[in-house]
Length: 350
Image 1 (cartoon, rainbow, N blue to C red):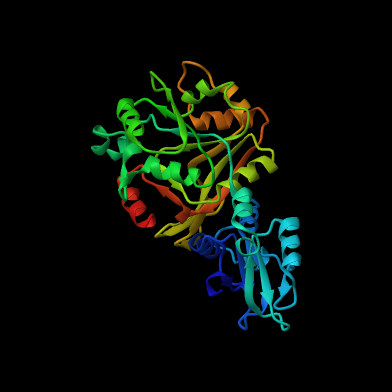
Image 2 (cartoon, one colour):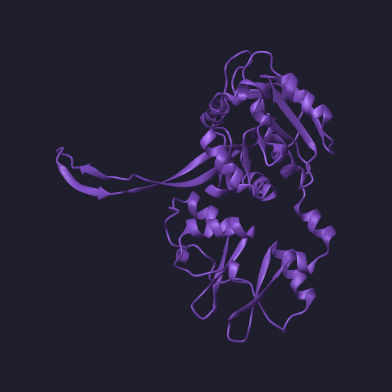
């Protein structure tokens, strides 16, 4: 229980890291005597960041102070099931008669494995963009395509596929160009239960150009991911977030905090020094390279023209469409596209 109980004065950043470490979607907010004050979900954090909260802010203004709960020893399994089904909760706190947290119920303990899998599986396509040269990883990529960079005994693209396959997805498209024959040979010899199709782009024209070959082939929102990023998040929640909010594109963004290691000079309107800000901190949401796209946005991709995914996002926004942002903790984003991050990725995936 201690790993999911938090105090109301911790920061959003700290809460995100706890959620990421425990792989839970809900934390219990308690006081010094373990009395339940409320609950904090990944959705609460996501909403707060999208409304402009900084990841250094404390959680006391964003957690749910009126959570659904049950009293230990004073409920039936039928009652618990009804609450889970009606509210789609992942967790229900159990308290004693004084309101202190003594335990919690989770979906897995109330329903059988079949119902768990039915709730959390998806059956939608995934496009992996694996055609780039990976110049940031030279000289390694002088020999192999970056999608085959090994991490703990298997290439990064296999890590990506297995995370999607783990929730029931088995329909993959691989866009290829650079050293395509090596990639093809790898997948021909790989034993797997999923299906994949290669999309070959003869001339590399940008990260989104190859997606034009999928026009008319897809009828539902689908995932698009770079081949050098591993995102440790709930893909089902991401997909539901996209559909529920009726976005045309949703991008996954990592919440990052940067500190300037110097005193920065702030000037007034006359150009004189107003004050010195000592080691200021700034919060950013960084694009990770994982997206959910509606199939109709593919019609906006031009033929025979250099065109990146950022161009597609800009065009969708300029045409009055909706682009969503799905924030995740920085530790949930593993970028192996450059050597400095590759070394960190090895540790993160242990």
